Length: 345
Ligand code: NCD
Ligand code: ZN
View 1 (cartoon, helix red, strand yellow):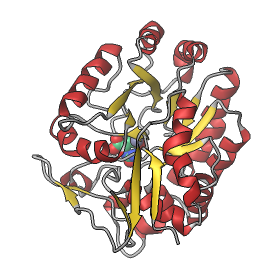
View 2: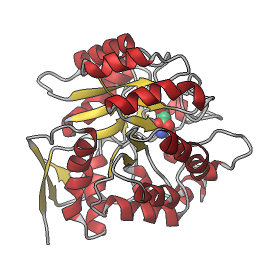
View 3: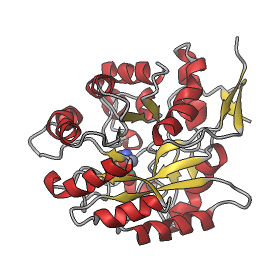
View 4: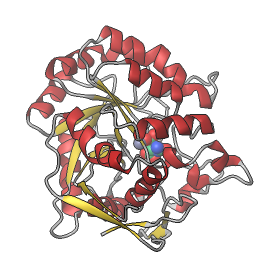
């Protein structure tokens, strides 16, 4: 029985760090285990220009714990006003590693996102030319589309047309939640990648809704039926290069989660590596964990694999603090609902 596993240090290909007090409170959780992360630009106001991204990167670097070598990989928030030249310059200078597409209104702080996909065509074409990936929040926002169907409908109505009209554009389907997305990803060439979160590998929609509503399990895209969770587990543990970890760790204060209209997001940064190791072990796929957390993402983004490693050891149940404190109030850490036996050394 395996009792210790050593992996190339993981990266997180989809992370929300926020700003100010929250940034300072949550950054150490990621910087302790991960070498790099793709930083989501959905601040208020959003990170839309290269100047915004440079400023945000500096604030992240100055919030890092002493001695940390964590590297934030910056993104720009795509709007209908985005200037393709600004994007290209930010890419050429090495400042940004991706551009993020939020359909307007799809999720937290997405009001400045895209409503008319034709208006961002010049930017997408430029990105295809220069090899800059587009990270996609893949949900339609039409009020007449059931929230559990929004990802599958997005693939047909938006993603596939973008893929067909912008050949060569590198696209990441982010935080996929359905077997439809897994199948679509598998049908495409290696210009398409897909991230999977930690929480979508362990919860289905019953966890949110059965036996009382659990706001801390509410995130977007919302968790789906069990058959979809199983499809995600199959994808994550398959070893296929197109699938890699993007935790979508998305901290909100408990006060903001527990409102009558509470915020979407699960805060998984502190215990993600323990949860994933447990899940991969349960599926007899520990030998596939390193690909998912540490190899496939860098390969997609054309970045080197990290040189150092982390080791997890199996033993008595490991506990994580149930909350991270911030000056604005506590942030609840994701509870996977089972004991965690793998500890990050
Ligand atoms: C994210 C957030 O809070 O910023 N929330 C979430 O439920 N995942 C936004 C997002 O990635 O959709
Ligand atoms: Zn997110």
